Amino acid sequence: MSRVPYHTIDSAPDASRPLLQKVAQSSPTGRPLNLHAQMAHAPAVLASYASLRAATVDHGTLGPKISWALNLATAATVGSDYMIGIASRFARTSGWTEAQTASLRAGATTGDTRIDALIRVVREAAANSGCVTDATWKTAQQAGWNDVHLTEAFAYLGLTLFTGYFLNYAQTDADI
Image (cartoon, rainbow, N blue to C red; front, side, top):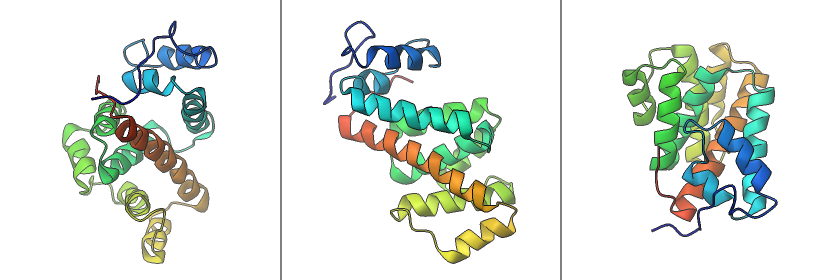
């Protein structure tokens, strides 16, 4: 059972309404998803989420295919079924096959050694409170990822942790 009330754009607190409306415009359903409807109950939560999301969209350089792989790998590592569902859907629409998406969920390789090296960094960080071994970091660098890429990967890790933890915390009902 959900712990936090769901809101429509009309029922949301005044400070959440413009943010909820903007989020709804980019939603795959054209309306706020349950996670957004619950986040709107506390404007600070919705504003934090929207800011993290906007930062990755506006300033990210990795592209949707890689960013959704990082989101899915993180969601699978931390265990948020709703977030895994969202990230799986967007991973498929950004170019990952069903088999690759299943591999990302399972912690297996995708078949792309360069991308797998970056995914290992994010998985390790998600599983170890942000800690990544030097060996994992160096393997990613040797695969061609520079310090900007490795630093940016943290933004996707952070966005997914924030979202996945909120979904678990609020016991959000899946709607996607």
